[in-house]
Structures are given as C-alpha cells and as structure tokens.
Amino acid sequence: MTHAEPELPPLREVIAAYELRARKSLGQNFLLDLNLTGRIARAAGPVAGYRVIEVGPGPGGLTRALLAVGAEKVIAIEKDTRCIAALRPLAEAYPGRLEVIAGDALTFDLATLGAGPTKIVANLPYNIATPLLIGWLSPVQWPPVWDNLTLMFQKEVAQRIVAQPGSKAYGRLSVITQWRCDAEILFDVPAKAFTPPPKVTSAIVQITPRAAPMAAIAQADLERVTMAAFGQRRKMLRRSLSGLGVSVPDLLALAGLEPTARAEEIDVAGFCALAKAYAGLRETG
Ligand code: SAM
Image (cartoon, rainbow, N blue to C red; front, side, top):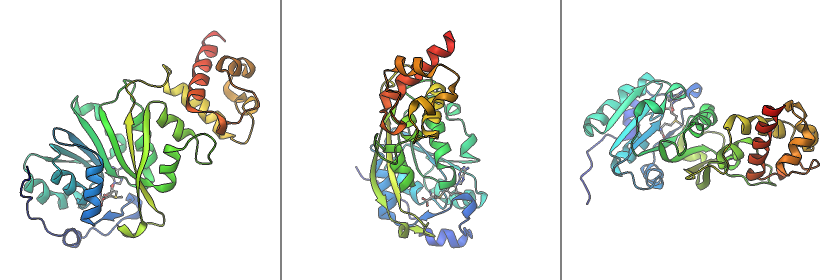
C-alpha cells in the first residue's frame, strides 16, 4: 500500500531559508539527491514497526527518506540549533513520527529510549564517526537494542571496519566490530554527491549483530590486546604484547598463537583467544 507523501519544499530552499551554511566543525556535508537518500533508507531493510535513530539530520534529506519508506518513528539527534528549526515543518508534515532531539549524539544514551525494535541510520559527521560507532558496539548486554546499523563513513574507515586479516586496513576497528557483528560495505558514494563535497569518497556500511559474540570475553580485554598488538603492528607478538603486564610466552601459549606472528595475521577468533588468555593470566598473576 502506498501513501501520498506530504508536499515539502526542495532541500535547497530549506538550506537557503534557514541559512544552513555548512560548518566544517560539525562535519556538515549534506545529501540533497533524493534518489540517493532513498537508496540509503531502503538499504536499512524494512523499517515499518521500527523506530529509526538518525544522528545528524541536518536539513532533513535522509530523514524525509526514512519517513517516506515507512519508519514508524524517526528519532533524530542534532547538535546544530539552526537545523533543529529547519526540521520543524518536517515534523509537522509527519505528525507524531519525527522526534528531534537537540543535543550531542556522543553523550546520548540509547538505553534511555527503552526496549523496542530499533535501527540506526545516518550520514555521520566524519569527525566523530568512529567514536559513535564504538559506542554503539559496546553495550554490556548482547544482542544490543539495535537490529542493524546503516551508516555512511569515509571509505577508508568503512574498509577498516570490514577488513579481513592480511590486509593493510585490518586493525582494531575490524576486530572490535567483527567479534560481535557481521559488517559489509553496501555501496560507495562519490564526493560530488554531497553539498559541499568532502575531499574523499564515502561508503555505506551495514553492521548486523551476531546472535551471540564470537567468544565470551570482556570488550575491555579485547581492546587492551588489540591496542597492544596493532600499536606496534610490524613487530612480532612476542614484542608487541610485552607491555600488557603478563607473561607473554604464557599468554601466547594459552591463546594458541605463534610468538613470531604479527597482529595483521591474527584472525578475529585469535584475538578473542588472546583476550580470554589475558583475562585469565591477569586474574592468576
Ligand atoms: N543527514 C544530513 C544529510 O545526509 O544531508 C546531514 C549529514 S552531515 C554529514 C552530519 C550532521 O551531523 C550535521 O547535520 C551536523 O550538524 C550533525 N552533527 C555533528 N556533530 C554532531 C553531534 N555531536 N551530535 C549530533 N549531531 C551532530
């Protein structure tokens, strides 16, 4: 069943009327192409019956698309007060379906929303994209409150998220994402699709939680071992892990890893084994 969509002014008019000159400090690169915002919204999969959290709605291009594809409710968190005023007519055009929260997404606690089918869809401000992602990936309870994340990153960051062992892009972000999630790049978005265009190509990444983590470990332990190993990624593990404060030969033996291996060669399951061994040795040591 299709519903008639409300008549809305073109986004360029909204930008002009509310004087939304893009601010670099807020990572503002707007998407004005309705085909593209529609494609991103559809990439999130079914949204009927879901609340969709959007970080940084800006003038509201992606927000409109999410509402048009049938999101039951869009909760949009925006730091720029100019944009909050610009979104008011959109909230009025979709009564009860758009809630705009004025604030900083970095300090917004998803838990305050309570349970309920949730997806997160955003064209992220690049300067805070990685800390936002790490925050969403880090709840103690798993699976998390969200069913999937459909997010725009700089392509280079997208490649780090999905990277496999043996590649240059493989690192902490790959391991921290993949021990509890599947991640894939859905499509690239060229710089010229944005107003103003950024310097780099972007990509849409979809992240879906695994029903259970790859291993029963604490994320803090996984962060410690990946930080040590990738902090000195050219060194062999017997050297790079020496700052962890536990016996490195015991650690590697317990994890079943070769002392001469380098971080880049260890798969995500290997890092999980390392985190588990590290936790055990710290307790007994
Ligand atoms: N969604 C819009 C689009 O696709 O055209 C705008 C995307 S723009 C890349 C990023 C948006 O995030 C901007 O509207 C910016 O004001 C907002 N923003 C930046 N930092 C933020 C923060 N800490 N919390 C919430 N929103 C933020």
